[in-house]
Every structure is written in structure tokens, then in C-alpha cells.
Length: 260
Image 1 (cartoon, rainbow, N blue to C red):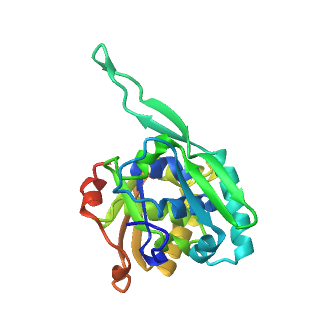
Image 2: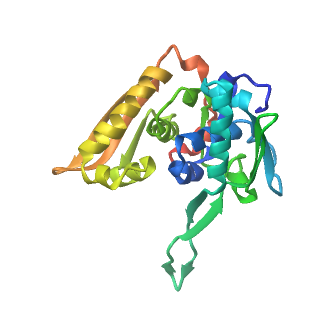
């Protein structure tokens, strides 16, 4: 399903919703290299029992993100280097003790265990941390999936993060997040979180505008208030009818989307 020969328009990004949430701290450069690498994995194949390498060439990176070769390799190398030092944090339910629920388990892990660079041939190879593979290759039930092409034109990390939040609920056409969850997913600053108008002007409006203009979305949104306080944000969305042929939905993904 996913291999190096597929055209950019058909490459799919598939990752667990837990990983989508945990990965919200990635920079735009790191996000680009991770999602291009993920699009080369096959989520339907058995998960390898050990670490798994994925090679990305500067030519692939340049084609995917519409940049020149020299810039592509420098961005690729820099992102791979910083990604090596990145970690993810998951929270999983814990067992009860004496009939009382325990606090969730916190799990920290790396994205990759090794990054290899080849200056002369302009490629980077990432070796995925083996415990992250089930979140990338279809073992976890709750998944987000979208075409890589939908994100390659995006120049704002906020737009990419919003795209993933919407795609988790694409079968319903609407999504609602508490303001706390939304701010955390967007990695909003303390200053932004202190005043909803900052989230509106700096995050929501620019992200919606870019998705509408560059990826053919029709998006409306509104704040949900409790008294004078914004408690949640609700989005209603669809793809422009001219864009529908460029993406596909999988029932096995949608079946679990609202249950996350």
C-alpha cells in the first residue's frame, strides 16, 4: 500500500490517535520528516519484532514539500538530528487497587533509536524505536489517517495540528474540544491560553484560513461559552467537492474515530 514508488497524491499517513496527541510538540520540520517517513510504512503489515529503518532522500523531501535540493537536505538533516533527541509521553489506564482507580501510567519513549546521514548521496535513514511501531502500523484500534499531500503545502504547524484534529472525526463532519484539550493540542503558549482572543487570532483563524485556501476545506467554527468563559471550540467541516477525489476514507479507521 505504501512504498517508494507511489505518487505523492496517494501516499497516506496512518498513526494512532494517541500518537497524534503525543506528537503535537513536534516542530514543523520534525513533523515533515516524521510524516513523510510514516507515509512509507504499510499499516497492514505485521509489526516487526525489532527496530525498523526508513530511508528518506533529499529528492523525496524536496518533491514532497516543494523546496530545492540543497534546502531539502539541510532541513532533512537538521530535523533528523533534533528528532533523535525528542521523546513522547503517553498516558495509559492503570489497574484498580482495593477497588479504587489508580492514576494513569505515564510512559516516555523515543521516536527513533538511530539516525544515519549520508552527505554524498543526500539521504537520511531513521530507525524507529520498536515500541512506537504498533502506533504506526495498524495494531492500535483508534487511528488518524490522511493523505500526505493534504499537509505538504502547509507552512504553519498550527494548520497541520488542526488538520489532524479534524481528521480524527472526518466521518461525522464535526469535532468539539474543550479549550484545555485544544490549547494543549496546539501547544499554545501561556500568554495565548490566558486570553481566548489570542488563541483565536494567532492559532484558529490563520490555521482555518490556510486549510481552506491550500487544501480545499470548508470550515466553520464557534466558541462554546459558559457565562463569559470559553469552555470549548466546535468545528464543522467538509472537503470542497472538487477535492473529494483526492482523499479516501477507510471504514476500519472511521469505526473507532469517535470512540477515542
